[in-house]
Length: 315
Image (cartoon, rainbow, N blue to C red; front, side, top):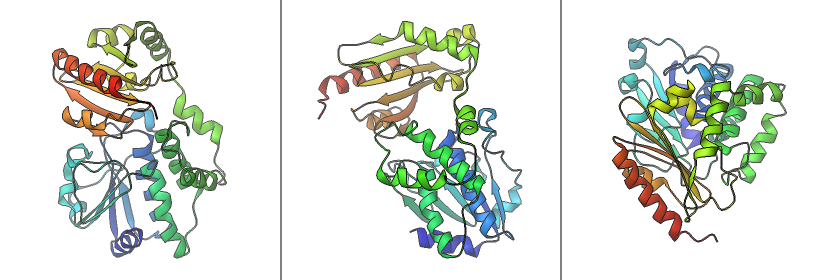
């Protein structure tokens, strides 16, 4: 599959790389890291990254301006996006050829070429694997590509704390850190926070509901976010605030936006992605997202998640 993707990349003079909406470091890292690898090895190709610019991730990369006309003569690659409705910038449908590269469980098959690796810690790790095809052709990994891909791996593994951190993950991390980019600067950019978020974090720690099943529940209505001066997306950054609490099996943040209530699910054992799929979402077995339309619906999600935790036996 890696060879097929590399051969397809060689054919096209113009390449546009997408990722998912509401991006995270892996979305940005894999997208921009792949652009850097292609651009370095094939300097005559035009390579673009597209999607809404996220101010909190500008330290990684800035999106390009891409005309609609460019898509019809371009190879389009979508990174880190399980289903079509979550692809940022729907102009991707005008592609000359479409490739999907993703590590999420497949819920939507799309693309002329589709490379799915659920055992990979991140799509950034998959781009590292793809780089081996470039390496056979004489490519070397640039410092910037290494920085971007390392950020993606770190983001999706929770700084190598999550079970998705494998021997292969550490192999690539060790390769990437040999490049001359500043680890302290990168970590500072990834994890620095603001006073409003710190104060919201304090509220979450004081208000968490912990159920006998090992489920933790937090409700964050719009009024509460406004009180602390924090956006829904910023609130997502503290979803792991109480992840180290003894006896915790899984937890859910319900975060209200103007039109939906975001459901942010995390787990230390019970698989939660199927639950997310039933509520307009999906993701990984231990980290998923969904959305519902009312607080009544959040009660249904909580009940199902409570049952999942109650029935879970730690092996």
